[in-house]
Amino acid sequence: MNINKKKILVIVPSRSQGNEREKNVDRFIDAWKEHSEGLSDIVIALDPDDEHYYTRRKEAIYFVNKTRERMIPTLNKCANAFANEYEMIAFFGDDHLIKTKWESEMYKANQVANGFGIFYGDDLLQGARLATAVCLDAKIVRLLGYIAPPMLTHLYADNFWMDLGRALDTLKYFPEIVFEHIHPHIGKSEEDSMYIESNSFFEADQKKYEQYVSSGEFNKAIECIKQNKNL
Figure 1 (cartoon, rainbow, N blue to C red):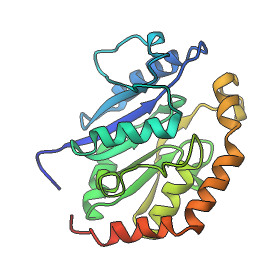
Figure 2: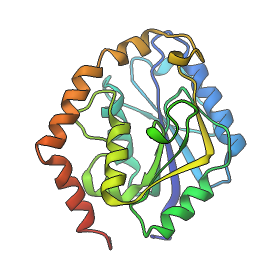
Figure 3: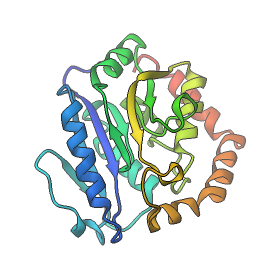
Figure 4: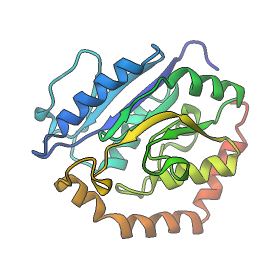
């Protein structure tokens, strides 16, 4: 590990579009502060036509795209902008809620794993089945140039993290760490236009991810990481 790098960066992409998602971000920042052990910074990733909805919190960094892009392109741009500064990068949706301490456990696990770790907790929806929120080694981003396959629009990043972690044998689930997913599909929130829009990408992103795997790009990513284990 590079001792000159900061430990963990938490990225939270958000778009309000008049749906009051800015309140989700405030709720997330408050929960992050409550359960932080001082090992992470937080960046809120926004679109330029939508950023006016969000009050700037002194605890957070704000990353604003030059143009409006969808969630995964925004996440990739933000991750690449900060990947050289941090040892680990975490992704959360603005509808996640951190409910336990987590930073030191995942940070220590990454050191034991000798890097390239991919870690997730219980979102009280998918549980061990899917990493809807994730914390991974920033070297993955630096090597691949992305935190999620860049052809994706909004969905299937979590499938990628699960598949990559299994392929590298570095995936670890922490059932005692809770990142609650406050999702309308189980009645924990109202379905707004942003949920409806993201759901519309399901079939397209599924096909894109299947193509990413079948084309050999996924295997190339694995080999790229394995060849640079001592980076």
